[in-house]
Image (cartoon, rainbow, N blue to C red; front, side, top):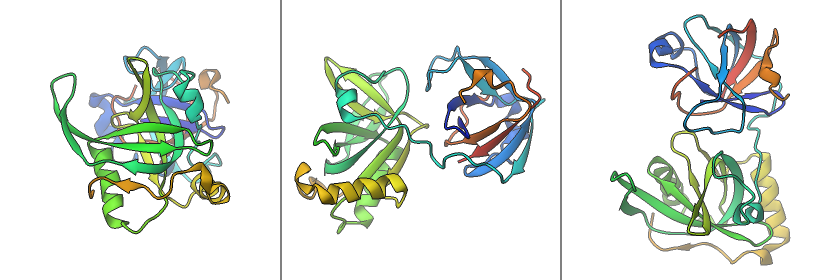
Length: 254
Protein backbone atom coordinates (compact mmCIF):
# COMPACT_ATOMS: atom_id res chain seq x y z
CA UNK A 1 0.00 0.00 0.00
CA UNK A 2 1.15 3.57 -0.66
CA UNK A 3 0.56 6.57 1.59
CA UNK A 4 0.75 10.21 0.57
CA UNK A 5 0.69 13.22 2.88
CA UNK A 6 -0.80 16.62 2.15
CA UNK A 7 2.43 17.82 0.56
CA UNK A 8 2.45 14.90 -1.85
CA UNK A 9 5.25 12.94 -0.18
CA UNK A 10 4.72 9.21 -0.57
CA UNK A 11 5.59 6.34 1.73
CA UNK A 12 5.32 2.58 1.51
CA UNK A 13 3.05 0.94 4.08
CA UNK A 14 2.49 -2.58 5.34
CA UNK A 15 -0.13 -4.54 7.25
CA UNK A 16 1.13 -7.93 8.39
CA UNK A 17 -1.20 -10.86 7.93
CA UNK A 18 -1.67 -11.30 11.69
CA UNK A 19 -3.01 -7.73 11.94
CA UNK A 20 -4.96 -7.59 8.70
CA UNK A 21 -8.32 -8.68 10.09
CA UNK A 22 -8.40 -5.64 12.39
CA UNK A 23 -7.93 -3.14 9.56
CA UNK A 24 -9.26 -4.69 6.34
CA UNK A 25 -12.89 -3.66 6.84
CA UNK A 26 -12.22 0.03 7.34
CA UNK A 27 -9.37 0.63 4.88
CA UNK A 28 -10.80 1.66 1.51
CA UNK A 29 -9.42 3.58 -1.42
CA UNK A 30 -10.50 7.22 -1.75
CA UNK A 31 -11.13 7.60 1.97
CA UNK A 32 -9.52 9.74 4.64
CA UNK A 33 -8.63 8.39 8.08
CA UNK A 34 -7.16 9.49 11.36
CA UNK A 35 -4.63 6.94 12.54
CA UNK A 36 -3.56 6.53 16.15
CA UNK A 37 -0.31 4.78 17.08
CA UNK A 38 1.04 3.68 13.71
CA UNK A 39 4.64 2.50 13.65
CA UNK A 40 7.64 3.62 11.63
CA UNK A 41 10.30 1.07 10.69
CA UNK A 42 13.52 1.34 8.73
CA UNK A 43 12.92 0.73 5.05
CA UNK A 44 14.71 -2.60 4.73
CA UNK A 45 12.15 -4.16 2.42
CA UNK A 46 13.33 -6.17 -0.55
CA UNK A 47 11.18 -4.19 -2.98
CA UNK A 48 11.44 -0.48 -2.21
CA UNK A 49 8.89 1.49 -4.17
CA UNK A 50 10.17 4.89 -2.97
CA UNK A 51 13.50 6.29 -1.89
CA UNK A 52 12.46 6.82 1.73
CA UNK A 53 14.23 5.93 4.97
CA UNK A 54 11.13 4.58 6.68
CA UNK A 55 8.04 2.52 6.00
CA UNK A 56 4.80 2.71 7.93
CA UNK A 57 3.14 -0.22 9.73
CA UNK A 58 -0.37 -0.64 11.09
CA UNK A 59 -0.36 -3.23 13.87
CA UNK A 60 -2.73 -4.32 16.64
CA UNK A 61 -1.99 -1.15 18.62
CA UNK A 62 -2.98 1.01 15.66
CA UNK A 63 -6.46 2.55 15.63
CA UNK A 64 -8.01 3.96 12.43
CA UNK A 65 -10.97 6.33 12.22
CA UNK A 66 -12.53 7.95 9.18
CA UNK A 67 -12.15 11.68 8.61
CA UNK A 68 -13.06 14.06 5.78
CA UNK A 69 -10.59 16.94 5.97
CA UNK A 70 -7.68 15.79 3.79
CA UNK A 71 -6.50 18.85 1.83
CA UNK A 72 -3.62 17.38 -0.15
CA UNK A 73 -3.43 16.60 -3.89
CA UNK A 74 -5.81 14.07 -5.37
CA UNK A 75 -3.20 11.87 -7.01
CA UNK A 76 0.18 13.46 -6.38
CA UNK A 77 1.62 12.68 -9.80
CA UNK A 78 5.38 13.19 -10.16
CA UNK A 79 6.02 12.75 -13.86
CA UNK A 80 9.38 11.69 -15.26
CA UNK A 81 10.07 12.89 -18.79
CA UNK A 82 10.60 10.32 -21.52
CA UNK A 83 13.99 11.92 -22.17
CA UNK A 84 15.14 11.42 -18.58
CA UNK A 85 13.88 7.82 -18.59
CA UNK A 86 15.62 6.92 -21.85
CA UNK A 87 18.83 8.68 -20.80
CA UNK A 88 19.04 6.59 -17.64
CA UNK A 89 18.17 9.48 -15.35
CA UNK A 90 15.32 7.62 -13.61
CA UNK A 91 16.26 4.85 -11.20
CA UNK A 92 14.95 1.39 -11.98
CA UNK A 93 14.98 0.67 -8.23
CA UNK A 94 11.98 2.87 -7.43
CA UNK A 95 8.57 3.62 -8.95
CA UNK A 96 7.91 6.57 -11.22
CA UNK A 97 4.98 8.27 -13.02
CA UNK A 98 4.78 9.13 -16.72
CA UNK A 99 2.20 10.35 -19.21
CA UNK A 100 2.01 9.88 -22.96
CA UNK A 101 -0.12 9.62 -26.06
CA UNK A 102 -0.84 6.01 -27.06
CA UNK A 103 0.56 5.96 -30.55
CA UNK A 104 0.39 2.23 -31.13
CA UNK A 105 -0.68 -0.94 -29.37
CA UNK A 106 -0.17 -4.61 -30.11
CA UNK A 107 -2.07 -7.83 -29.56
CA UNK A 108 -1.97 -9.65 -26.25
CA UNK A 109 0.91 -12.11 -26.11
CA UNK A 110 1.15 -15.24 -23.97
CA UNK A 111 4.60 -15.64 -22.50
CA UNK A 112 6.69 -17.21 -19.75
CA UNK A 113 8.42 -14.99 -17.20
CA UNK A 114 12.06 -15.40 -16.27
CA UNK A 115 10.86 -17.24 -13.16
CA UNK A 116 9.08 -19.84 -15.29
CA UNK A 117 5.56 -18.52 -14.61
CA UNK A 118 2.98 -18.57 -17.40
CA UNK A 119 1.79 -15.03 -18.02
CA UNK A 120 0.58 -12.63 -20.71
CA UNK A 121 1.22 -9.05 -21.74
CA UNK A 122 0.61 -6.37 -24.31
CA UNK A 123 3.06 -3.78 -25.62
CA UNK A 124 2.28 -0.16 -26.42
CA UNK A 125 4.21 2.74 -27.86
CA UNK A 126 3.75 6.01 -25.97
CA UNK A 127 4.89 9.39 -27.25
CA UNK A 128 5.32 12.55 -25.21
CA UNK A 129 4.90 16.20 -26.17
CA UNK A 130 8.55 16.39 -27.23
CA UNK A 131 7.94 13.61 -29.75
CA UNK A 132 9.98 11.02 -27.85
CA UNK A 133 8.66 7.46 -28.08
CA UNK A 134 8.78 4.96 -25.23
CA UNK A 135 7.80 1.28 -25.18
CA UNK A 136 5.43 0.27 -22.38
CA UNK A 137 4.63 -3.31 -21.40
CA UNK A 138 1.44 -4.02 -19.46
CA UNK A 139 1.19 -7.38 -17.71
CA UNK A 140 -1.85 -9.43 -16.80
CA UNK A 141 -4.53 -7.34 -15.02
CA UNK A 142 -3.08 -4.14 -16.48
CA UNK A 143 -3.13 -5.70 -19.93
CA UNK A 144 -6.79 -6.63 -19.31
CA UNK A 145 -7.60 -3.08 -18.21
CA UNK A 146 -6.10 -1.55 -21.33
CA UNK A 147 -7.67 -4.10 -23.66
CA UNK A 148 -11.08 -3.53 -22.10
CA UNK A 149 -10.80 0.22 -22.66
CA UNK A 150 -9.75 -0.26 -26.27
CA UNK A 151 -12.56 -2.73 -27.00
CA UNK A 152 -15.18 -0.39 -25.52
CA UNK A 153 -13.83 2.75 -27.20
CA UNK A 154 -13.02 1.64 -30.73
CA UNK A 155 -13.85 5.03 -32.18
CA UNK A 156 -11.56 6.89 -29.77
CA UNK A 157 -8.98 8.70 -31.86
CA UNK A 158 -6.67 10.02 -29.17
CA UNK A 159 -5.82 8.01 -26.06
CA UNK A 160 -3.67 9.58 -23.37
CA UNK A 161 -2.39 7.29 -20.64
CA UNK A 162 -0.97 8.07 -17.20
CA UNK A 163 0.99 5.29 -15.54
CA UNK A 164 1.42 5.97 -11.84
CA UNK A 165 4.02 3.96 -9.94
CA UNK A 166 5.45 2.34 -13.04
CA UNK A 167 8.80 0.57 -13.40
CA UNK A 168 11.82 1.35 -15.55
CA UNK A 169 13.71 -1.58 -17.05
CA UNK A 170 17.14 -1.56 -18.68
CA UNK A 171 17.67 -4.67 -20.80
CA UNK A 172 21.04 -4.81 -22.54
CA UNK A 173 21.13 -1.04 -22.83
CA UNK A 174 17.55 -0.66 -24.07
CA UNK A 175 15.34 1.19 -21.59
CA UNK A 176 11.61 0.52 -21.53
CA UNK A 177 8.86 0.88 -18.94
CA UNK A 178 6.24 -1.46 -17.51
CA UNK A 179 3.72 -1.74 -14.74
CA UNK A 180 4.89 -2.87 -11.30
CA UNK A 181 2.79 -5.72 -10.00
CA UNK A 182 -0.07 -4.69 -7.70
CA UNK A 183 1.06 -1.12 -7.08
CA UNK A 184 0.69 0.54 -10.50
CA UNK A 185 -2.40 2.58 -11.39
CA UNK A 186 -3.53 3.33 -14.93
CA UNK A 187 -5.47 6.48 -15.85
CA UNK A 188 -6.78 5.97 -19.38
CA UNK A 189 -8.24 9.10 -21.00
CA UNK A 190 -9.68 10.21 -17.67
CA UNK A 191 -10.85 13.79 -17.37
CA UNK A 192 -8.29 14.83 -14.80
CA UNK A 193 -6.28 18.02 -15.09
CA UNK A 194 -3.12 16.31 -16.29
CA UNK A 195 -4.73 14.42 -19.18
CA UNK A 196 -6.90 17.37 -20.23
CA UNK A 197 -3.85 19.65 -20.35
CA UNK A 198 -1.83 17.05 -22.24
CA UNK A 199 -4.55 16.69 -24.87
CA UNK A 200 -4.91 20.45 -25.18
CA UNK A 201 -1.20 20.83 -25.84
CA UNK A 202 -1.28 17.91 -28.26
CA UNK A 203 -4.06 19.54 -30.28
CA UNK A 204 -2.01 22.72 -30.49
CA UNK A 205 1.04 20.82 -31.71
CA UNK A 206 -0.41 17.78 -33.53
CA UNK A 207 2.63 17.41 -35.78
CA UNK A 208 4.52 16.12 -32.75
CA UNK A 209 2.68 12.83 -33.15
CA UNK A 210 2.03 10.23 -35.74
CA UNK A 211 -1.71 10.27 -36.38
CA UNK A 212 -4.19 7.91 -34.78
CA UNK A 213 -2.85 4.72 -33.26
CA UNK A 214 -2.50 1.57 -35.33
CA UNK A 215 -4.33 -1.46 -33.94
CA UNK A 216 -2.55 -4.70 -34.71
CA UNK A 217 -5.23 -6.82 -33.15
CA UNK A 218 -8.55 -6.06 -31.55
CA UNK A 219 -8.06 -5.97 -28.47
CA UNK A 220 6.85 17.64 4.15
CA UNK A 221 9.04 15.71 3.78
CA UNK A 222 8.73 12.89 6.21
CA UNK A 223 11.31 14.03 8.78
CA UNK A 224 10.34 10.72 10.26
CA UNK A 225 6.85 12.22 10.52
CA UNK A 226 6.90 11.87 14.26
CA UNK A 227 4.37 14.60 14.84
CA UNK A 228 1.26 14.66 16.93
CA UNK A 229 -0.99 14.96 13.92
CA UNK A 230 -0.23 13.82 10.36
CA UNK A 231 -2.31 13.49 7.23
CA UNK A 232 -1.76 10.67 4.78
CA UNK A 233 -3.39 9.63 1.54
CA UNK A 234 -3.48 5.92 0.88
CA UNK A 235 -3.09 5.73 -2.84
CA UNK A 236 -2.98 2.13 -3.87
CA UNK A 237 -4.62 -1.08 -4.52
CA UNK A 238 -3.24 -3.86 -2.37
CA UNK A 239 -1.95 -4.25 1.19
CA UNK A 240 1.10 -6.44 0.72
CA UNK A 241 2.51 -6.29 4.25
CA UNK A 242 1.63 -3.51 6.66
CA UNK A 243 4.36 -2.66 8.95
CA UNK A 244 6.30 1.10 16.71
CA UNK A 245 4.77 3.67 17.90
CA UNK A 246 3.43 7.10 17.07
CA UNK A 247 0.96 9.26 18.95
CA UNK A 248 -1.48 10.06 16.17
CA UNK A 249 -1.73 10.66 12.44
CA UNK A 250 -4.33 10.95 9.66
CA UNK A 251 -4.65 8.92 6.49
CA UNK A 252 -6.77 8.90 3.39
CA UNK A 253 -7.07 5.86 1.18
CA UNK A 254 -7.30 6.38 -2.58
